[in-house]
Each structure stands twice: as C-alpha cells, then as structure tokens.
Length: 365
Image 1: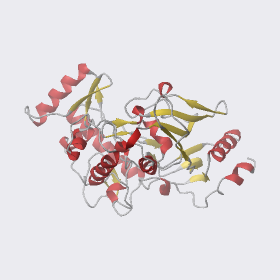
Image 2 (image 1 turned 90 degrees about the vertical axis):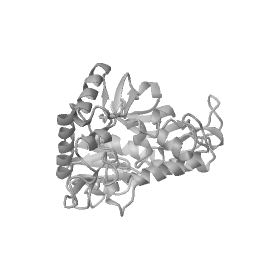
Image 3 (image 1 turned 120 degrees about the horizontal axis):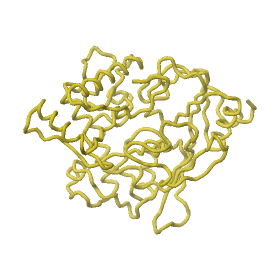
Image 4 (image 1 turned 120 degrees about the vertical axis):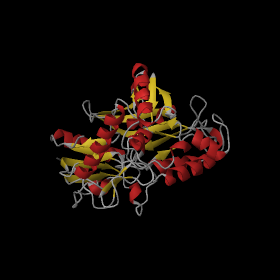
C-alpha cells in the first residue's frame, strides 16, 4: 500500500475492536481500522486496499450491522465524510440536497428543515449515516427513501470509477436495493428531492396523522412532523440514547414478511385458529402481496417485551418487540441465539418465516 491514502486518512486506529462502531455495541476486532474524512480519501483508501487484495468492511453509522464475536479478518474503512450541499438553482421545479455518505442521517434531516425545506421529516431519528439509506431503502411512518431519492454516487470498485446512479437503476423495494449484500459498489454520496416552504410529505401513517390531529394524506409543517416522529420513536426506544439499553440495537431486527396472495389466506386462517377467530390481523398491501407486522407476530407467538427476562444479557426491547437489544455485557452469539429463538417460534406458531434486516458480518442465522 502506498503512503498517500494514509496521509489523507486518519492513521489506523490502535484499538481495532468493531463493537464501538456499531449501535449494538457488539463485534470483535478487525485487522485494522482506518477513518476517511472526505470522499477523495475514501475512494483512494478503498482503491489502494483493493489493489493489494485486502478484504474491506465499509462502515458508516454502524446502525445496521451485526458483527461476529470473532470480528473481521481485514480492514474496516470508516466513512466520516460530512459535506452537505443544497445546490444552486432547481431541477424539475424542485429543490434538492446532496450529502456525503458519512453525514449523520438525522443531522441531515434537521439541516434540511433549518434551511426551510421539507420532505425527509418522517425519517427523523433513524440512526446511521446518509450513505446507508438507499442501500436499505430506509423507511418509516409511511415514507421511504425511494419516494425522495434523486440520485446516488457510487464507487464502482471493479471499474475503479465514480458515477451517479438514478433510482431506477437501484431496484428499490421494501428494505432492499441492488446495493444490498454486495461490496463491489460503495455509496459515497446521496441526493434527495425536497419540498418548498418546509412542507411535509403527505402523511400516510395513521398513528402519525392522528397524533398530529390531521387526516391521512394531508400535509402540514415539516417541523411539527419531525417533532412528533421523534416523540413516537423515542417512546419505542428507537432514538439512540447511551443511557438506555433499549436503544443498544440494530433497530428493527426482522423485516415485516410479505406473503404472496395465495399464501396469505392460509396464514391468516392459521393465525386465527391459534389466537381467536375474531382477531383483527394487521395486514397491508405491498409489492403485489400481503404484508404482515413482524412485531405483532412476535408478540402473538408468545415473545413479550423484555423477553427472556432481566437476567439475560440480550433481550427484546422493553418498549418494542421488533428490536433485539444488548443489555451491556452481551456477545453477538447470544444475540443470534435470541434471534433464532424468536424466528423459529414465529415459524412454528404461524408458518411465517422472518428474515433479518441488518447485514450480518462473518456470522449467520
């Protein structure tokens, strides 16, 4: 490796444990950790590591990673680029913002509101970095990144070039994209459409619109929406707080299952046979199928908040059954054992398979 990349990057960390780089606070050591404070350094660093055949793990906010206790046999590249640009002029009649991949996501949302724009407010409080949002097609309270994404700049590691990619090229779906579970393209910047006059997106999520006292589908002041979203997320332990172990998680651990229409009726019958014929099962149309609530299924399968109890180093959140949490002294193996317990219990009870939302590094379910 040449010295040029390391001159521009922070010198390799002496402490190579990865736990401190994830919101779960779990994960063993990497061979080395380097931090990149700007896009040029990031591109050069990854290119140089690729040239010498070094395995790399690219980390932004670490909010969607489950890293093995054994760690990662390679170099972790931490993205800390932080430039935000609201552009000069408009395109297609709308304003937009472009941010480096390392920008803290919630700080970006707040910055758009401070600048007098709306659009991203329903995604307030989501932990992690801006570069990860299109990879997962992050969503909350009725809004997904796909609704507002303008373009993504990626490093094509095979061709060794930077290029901008349109949303139509990314295969954006429910918590997925063509960028997920691959490492030949690294997101280095993202650009989003915004709304003028601090106007929110249409409020599609009934819990949120009810809390704001407006009808679903209406718009309102984006600052009001952000404040309410943060309150709702905070009540579910989904806003990072170093003093609250319910937030030592990777967010929602399982995605909501989407069933083909032909399978949905059988599954719904099985659920009602088990817990009562008069029960109302929450369902939502999605991607040509029927989406169920993973959290609802987990609770109805017998896994209460805080399961398996206060003596366990890993538990379901005491506020939200969809989050698996580290109570302070956990290991990744213990977290995965809990995930398997919950996954297998839901499958046995209802015949529904739950799939993890986080990226698993050097480990599996």
